Image (tube, rainbow, N blue to C red):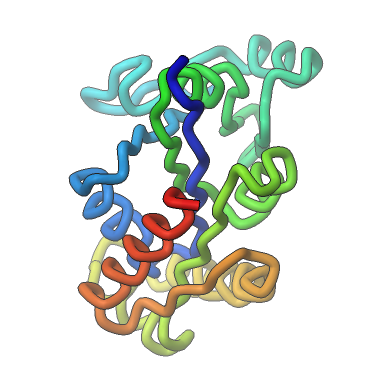
Length: 190
């Protein structure tokens, strides 16, 4: 019988480099499969169901919440839900692959609580709030108001960092990528 996989959870404030770190890990020898989230929003551009997200209606999302089908979910805006389906995670684990998540801090801690020692929860932390603000400005994708909102949210999210298994400070990207890789490798080899 093939061994069940484990779970690797990444959470971080926006602009911390979490997605870049995850992308670098998907190409390494960690047998990772990305967890595809469900959302009730409509597909954007060339997004495809089952690739970027599982697109379901707000009513179906609510029905699945009532049926306890989500590990974690959030209603980000009225009628706009995002969440992690238990069935998606179990499908990946049963295939013997390790599941990697890119989720908000509350969702990440909920997944960790549900799976316990089968999950490793990593928090990617910016070197400072000032550095994070500079990164968001350098991206040049957000208005000053959106950046201010993201910074305020980041300050709140940083308060959750101690609840994670490991905090990785992303000061130098390559160093943070290696630290994440080593932490995961050690966890998987246990």
